[in-house]
Length: 491
Image (cartoon, rainbow, N blue to C red; front, side):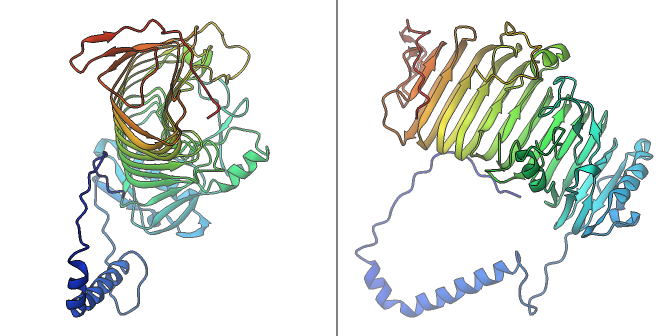
């Protein structure tokens, strides 16, 4: 898995070697030769543990799969063949059926050994652990005729890309309890390339399916695996409670892999996402809660969500987003210790008239931006709607949002808060911010219809819309320009 380290700024001291290095080098040629040979040998031995080496080296033993449930099955017990060609849907279904009968005994574990296991979509069951061994790869079949059609999500009222039914997910679950998907960093691969191409060519008649979707369920743990190349959103917990996603790597091409969001908590409650690496073709994380009138009617907010210790890349959208489908409301979200690198945007809140709902009590702290076009974005005119039945007077409420300890380098526009007269942004706080810039234009801290405060000194200088406080919290200057507009999308 990805090794995580504390995110922040590091200070390096340089040693002055100029005076003694030539003398040392001339008198220690033999020592340098020995050290060079030793270093080369060490690297060579190390590499044999990560790639196939010469036959004179003994192979590293395969890691045994731990038994995490009272009963454990192997996928091969049900006739599966891991050659990447044989279709193993029936084997997965038989295994899940066997586990479904063990609920009163603590459930069962399905071990997926090393190999490439091609399958059509299949369902999970309660009290189940799906364990992927090292070098195990579950492959989603690319022919859409094997993917079942499902009704639209009730809080969307519409297939996200087409009206009517949508494709189900490769791994799916509904109304479940106690679900674990884990392993020794095995992979679930949606083989989305065919889906992306057909989507761009407008050859699909239904909304693409996610890679993993679990709905109306509770007590879910997803850890120590890799999810890659989803046809659509990668991991989509929908109306779930008590969800943990930990030590997960999520990958898709950063361009030409449309809508491959990493993790989309949707009307979820009590969720933790931590220690993950995400590099995808859309939002790394996008917190949602329904779309316009359908989300308002469904009325299930996303709340009590903790996101921490992540490295995220998104060249198309943002590292961590809220919205734009947030009509059921989003509240009590903390995003901390996150590095966003080589991305179009770092963190973003997006909404529009017609959404209704709210985004409130959102805390960002210890954020690092590295080579990001726009750092912090709040956008209130993201005008994409399911149909003409939305109410343009259903206005979202955005308030109580704080940014503390924001640092970085190579950022073109550190802040762009684009409120409007209809949807002002209220009670925004900035504290301890220092972002290195790549663009020396004057107005790079951009605001419109925003009320809030800056505590202490930050860089770059904040917009005139915000009140100024000193480090002790004493008011220094009250803003009289909260409705001032200084938004420039030309850079």
